Amino acid sequence: MKKIFFETSLLERVDGSCVYREGLNKVVCSIVGPSEIKTRDDALGEAVLDVIIRFNIGLYGAKERQIEQTIHKIVSATIIRAMYPHTLIQVIIQVISCDKSENTASLLATMLNATNIALIDSGISLLYTFSAICFAVIIKNKEISIIADPAQKILNECMSTHVICYSFPDEKLLSCESIGHFTENEFFEILLKAKSSCKNIYYEIKTRMTEKMIQENRK
Image (tube, rainbow, N blue to C red; front, side, top):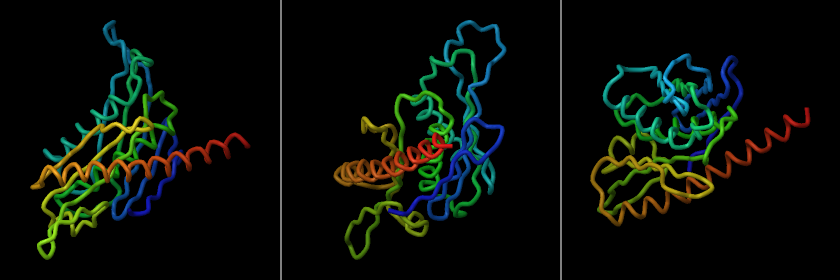
């Protein structure tokens, strides 16, 4: 698994932020809110969630909309929105760098991990935290291999890609974005490998965020 790099609380005028880098992908996620919504709608009994992704290359199309929808679905289920009635919570993700490829699987995993850390940094009440990882299924010399955190060259040539997201500490599958050709056995093997890899990411993030809190409390 590739080494991950992240820093938090770097941005001003936001409630939480994370700069996250994994391989060629680097993104900045910021959380704004909960901020009050001026409305007469009494039915607004929970926070409204808005996910905005700013890509540094290309046009905004169907794939980009799909990424926004995936992140919105996961974050919407993660935040305890009923605790923040009549408010707006914005998740803003800026892509700083990524491989110029149509395959966005590894970029989606990077965005999800950055969003999770930024949410923790914001202090918003969450039902759980989450982490994500990308897998590719390749065939080489007539042998099938399942690769975690594949390089972009592999993603562009593989049989299928899979972005798996698990919640923690309950270890439940939150999302699975799979594209391409793969067997049922390969799929279940990917889910098992992904749970282990996501758990490692979860523990690394938890350890570093706990250390940060301890250091801040000592100041």
